[in-house]
Amino acid sequence: MSWGTELWDQFDSLDKHTQWGIDFLERYAKFVKERIEIEQNYAKQLRNLVKKYCPKRSSKDEEPRFTSCIAFFNILNELNDYAGQREVVAEEMAHRVYGELMRYAHDLKTERKMHLQEGRKAQQYLDMCWKQMDNSKKKFERECREAEKAQQSYERLDNDTNATKADVEKQLQEMDERRTIKLSECYRGFADSERKVIPIISKCLEGMILAAKSVDERRDSQMVVDSFKSGFEPPGDFPFEDYSQHIYRTVSDGTISASKQESGKVDAKTTVGKAKGKLWLFGKKPKGPALEDFSHLPPEQRRKKLQQRIDELNRELQKESDQKEALNKMKDVYEKNPQMGDPGSLQPKLAETMNNIDRLRMEIHKNEAWLSEVEGKTGGRGDRRHSSDINHLVTQGRESPEGSYTDDANQEVRGPPQQHGHHNEFDDEFEDDDPLPAIGHCKAIYPFDGHNEGTLAMKEGEVLYIIEEDKGDGWTRARRQNGEEGYVPTSYIDVTLEKNSKGAVTYI
Image (tube, rainbow, N blue to C red):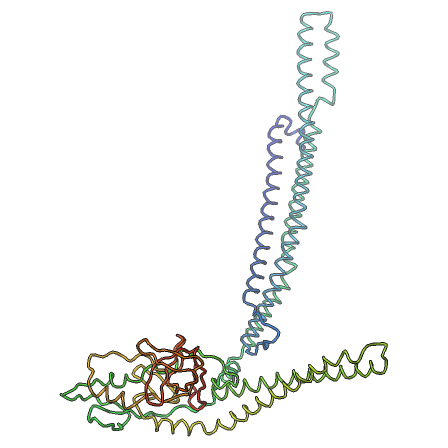
């Protein structure tokens, strides 16, 4: 079988076929290129995903403790390795398949162009020969004398090997067969590129499964308890007052009577609604400034914070002590060998280190005193809470109609009173007889005129009682000793809150 003999008159068809073969080769190279881009983008997106969900921790942050977090971090690491293997696949394809295909396609185009040029030249030469033969015949007819010469020229041209395309077509056949063999090799390389990384990918997936199995929900739940346990005992039942039967106060059985008097109908929801702005058991934690002694935290959390701070101060003290020892050794060396340095140059640094050591010791002593205080008071807090509930048996009970909650009546955050259609003299008498308890005191730093309605004028240096903290609007509610109340600017006063009035609330 030879294209030169079998397809001697199909030169144009061979031209189209060889061009189709090269186009097919380039199309497959384009497919490989797009597959490489998909692999690279896939690996890039996987790495971005790992980077997005990988925790960003500073040097001071603690390592993750929850097994679910550790398992998730292991999954992220395995996924990052998986992305690396996808990049290996893309690089292998680009090196072994795509680059080789592009070089080979370029060589095929050059070789085909050369063969086609040779074929066209042979065709032109053949056409020219046919024209010469035709002219020879015509001359033979016209000139008998030249018949012998024309016959000889005809025979010479007919026997000339350069006047055929068989060799060119045979070369085109060899080129197309080599193209087919190259495609077969590229097919195998395409499959081998991914088959090599299958074991590593399997290990990555097994690592993900092991990380998922390492999740311990009981351990994580215990860590949540250890992290957020306040140390308080659960609150007991709070007695309610029933004002619908008599004008004077009477303690009920823990429920609010729904009976109404004919002269003045007082709704139970309206009466109990006097408990304004309670702290909610499942509500948001009120925003306030973090105190140095962490007294704004529950006892258990405060103890942990203080212990953590004491440990940090001890580490800093150890560093300063080591630095002091090193400076003393250096000073001794300088004193023994003056040519190495001046001992007096180390004196300022030694003095600074000594000051730091004294400061750290004072801080440690102060924090240890606070820690001893919170450890000594944790046991008796339940009794103090019960005593506080009995002393402040008013409508600001442990629960409001909306379900608000607080451990200490002095900690209640009051909002604007609710508006009801039934307002009578009993409400006025109730509010006048039950003023808000003081939760601390303040000293005026600057004088304030207090011309606006609801404000309280004060003089510089005047001491007032605090009955309601700043809720973030820049105003604090205060009271004079004569009972006059009003709001004063928070920035004009120096506030001191009583520790026993900061009743802790457990926030979920």
